[in-house]
Amino acid sequence: MSELLAGQISDGAGRVIIDCEGFSYLTEHILGGLRDQRDEPRFNVLYATRQGHVITAVVAPGAKEVFMVNNDKVSDPWPVKTPQDVLNLVGRELMGQSDGIYGVSVKQSGSLPQGSAEHYAPPRVGALIWVDEKVAGTVTPEVADMYRRYSRTVGLGTEGYGGFLLWAKNQP
Picture 1 (cartoon, rainbow, N blue to C red):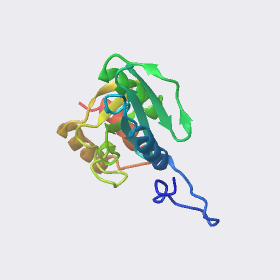
Picture 2: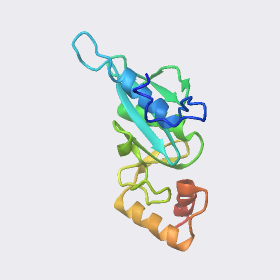
Picture 3: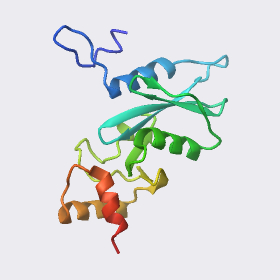
Picture 4: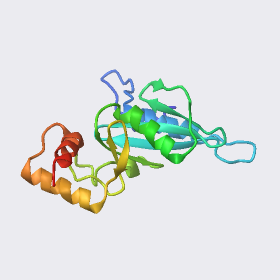
């Protein structure tokens, strides 16, 4: 465990502080390494990231169910039939009722919803658009360009991608 937690920050007494990235990392490195009788991965672990937070979705391929690890909380398993079901369940856990943009990937760096580590960078092409509590589409180059226009015209406040999506709904 010490080796797995070596990258996490610690307090003055040397106790490790595990943040959302740490919980996601532990989930992948513990459950992602389990194998079945055929030496196939027992679980597929996906990272889902919105600005400022990351969770993991653990998919049991044969059982057609998924559960989420969100910090120190583990959800009950949910039945899924399609990859779209997984994306909607992940979005519901990660985004809740807030409109926004999030990414899903097998690697945490690939799940960033923005094109760089900069908090207000334009959304990454391929990230998922979450509106009205469902996946409403994916970010295209045109959406990323629209975000750049929004940031120049309106400016960037604390509302992040949610404010952009509200603005975009009212554009011709």
